[in-house]
Length: 63
Image 1 (cartoon, helix red, strand yellow):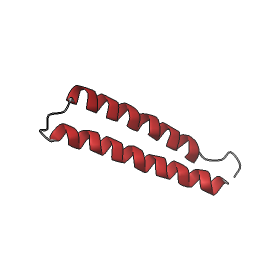
Image 2 (cartoon, one colour):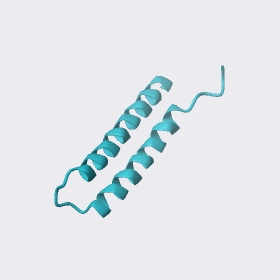
Image 3 (cartoon, rainbow, N blue to C red):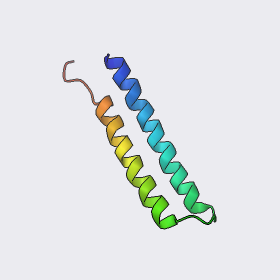
Image 4 (cartoon, rainbow, N blue to C red):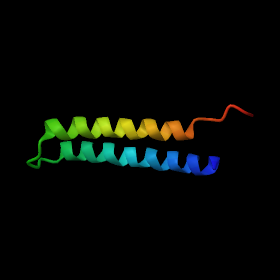
């Protein structure tokens, strides 16, 4: 079960990187989008998902 949680945490970290990259690329491209909404929403959601990922990866207390 610990291995499954670790893999889920890694997956969530990868998803957060993709969301952050998508928000940055959307800001770089000169499309007609609401940049004031896309960047904060992308950064906020990437941070939230990264936090979830780190909670699944946190090391066990027994060694």
